[in-house]
Image (tube, rainbow, N blue to C red; front, side):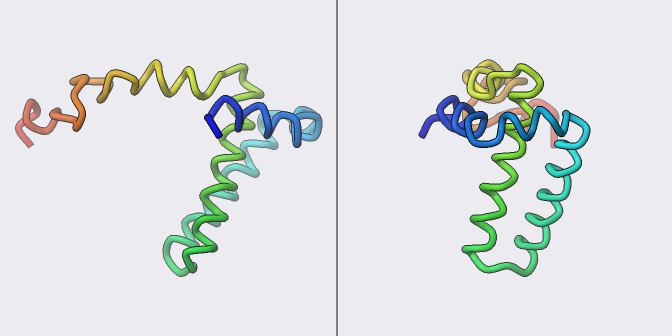
Length: 99
């Protein structure tokens, strides 16, 4: 499933509920899911980590939709040419920064 298709699917499933909650309330849920992902990365099984990554992606997608952002286009615009700073793949910024 492409990012745009996933975004549309999440809108179909949760769009009405998310709109009623608003961006601020939805962001709070997103932040909670990021915390759950943190715990899963530290102590969880592979299945738990997978589920938490999916949850974080779904909440991030919801926030993008609520903000009028096409997440696939945003990702393409920013990272489609490689690193946003040096436009290289892999990123070559560390060589330019002397790090």
